[in-house]
Length: 226
Image (cartoon, rainbow, N blue to C red; front, side, top):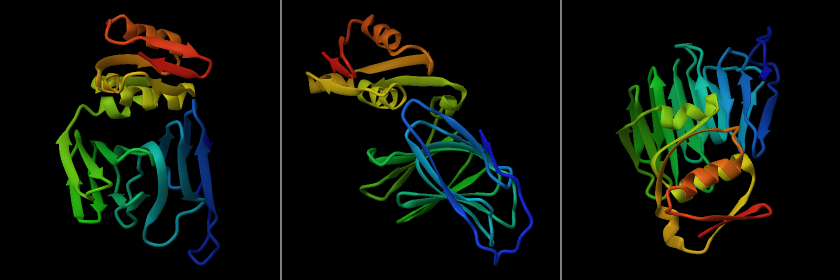
């Protein structure tokens, strides 16, 4: 964990921006100088100032993060990521914005957030999720089980009737492997899983194989899906 402490200084003082990069198979926790707590998932980048200045607290995200934002009504907290701004005052929520994925997910656990996109903005209430489509630039809202989208910060990987391709995309960020499909139809096979991030990948794959719907061959750092 990395923790910053607030120091005296004026807004005119030079602000140093830091970039934190989380590799595959790792998680990290960060406490910003305003007390905001940030959990960063694998393959995530966060750019943030050593000290917030002006009338906004702005950070830039690529990847996945869960935040517990320190309330400050006079200085809103803003996450900028690939076409949208997520604006909060004080709340707990998750943002998933990986470059290779076509959607950005903002999942609200408590409080209130505002998601600003190209075509407008929406406000979320707890247990709801905003899904921003990078292609159409539209934002859809749906009610969700927030644990499915934020459980990773507690070491859990949870999936409810989720396509195999999406599950393996997450797993490879944690276990650092590549995937090859011998049949593209297998990408859409749905699975429901509740696993720990620190379990061995062999055990996770064996669990899915026991359903009889899929078979895996491991060749070095490549998993072949049959």
